[in-house]
Length: 452
Image (cartoon, rainbow, N blue to C red):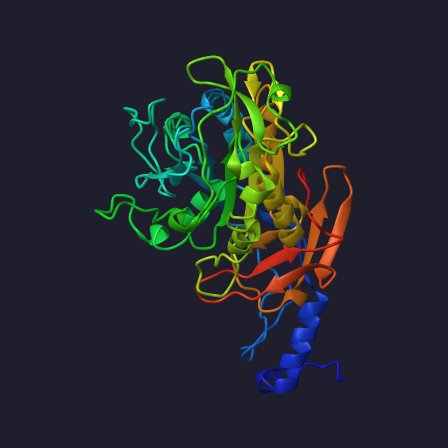
């Protein structure tokens, strides 16, 4: 190759374009992930004089600043009559939850909405078990809620169904939203409520829409991630249509008891439950038997829904989704009718545990978490949940580099070590469009961890 540089006409030739690409690739842009949330520059620019041909990268020294992580957080709150203490424990630790979200390595733009587990209830009295009644909860059923008192009535001061972290009264409004009262359905359909909340028609109806009722429009933002947090002391009992369901719940029709051992433990779903008016009675939960679970909507249907949610950018990209459950499990995450002092679960979270396990199997270990509802307080639980979304393996770049080979990413670990990652060896690359930024997704050996 001639070392001399001829005039502009030579520079505009096709093979000069090829040479320029090669040189620019040789001077790869090094991007360092910093705790300030910016991508820093550590490369020297290539001087490309003259007018470059189409497709040539004229400047190899861009400075990229990461846009904020955007996360939409949906709380699904059990509002049955056994949930008073559990709702209070969530409210007590919301400040810690919010502070953890705000401490993410990259600026975190998050918003919150709340729905309940109440959709409908098929129930029979102890005297007439063969003539069940269906009770509907049309004002809930996956619709975003305002805060309520224990009787399920709106609370003065709760004014917003979708809260932004930037709201001056965010924490106060958040605490009001979590309090959904204890006057809801005893057939907790947490997974179905989640599904209704995130899909048409509700996701397309305004939060103040006229009959047939308000919806959840504005909750899922284009390009944002989704974190679903289900809080329930019983297992999921989701059905799509009560008219065709043969799962019938009954009140506590058994004898007085002091422990589950008094309630025919050889039969599934038999528990000695505290009653609202005091005392304990034996009761069977039809949703927590093998026969009852076989009549419910498959857990895999809800996991498929989550893992295939479109991200709303009209590019075919899937939404980055996380599922967390505070439920009836022991300290190791195994389904259990746990107890802690006077607080106890009213069921066993077999289906919720299955939902989290399936989500992890489909989306990865950092996409699911289950923790015990019987914990003394929820500080650690809510911190762990917040950290699920504080570190994203997929990052928008805020601009559109034409080729992933032009990028080198340095990850500075909290341990003091540094990894250098390249396209195909530590991350994948998606080109951007006029409407969305290019993005990278970290893969082994460059998976991000908290503190990187």
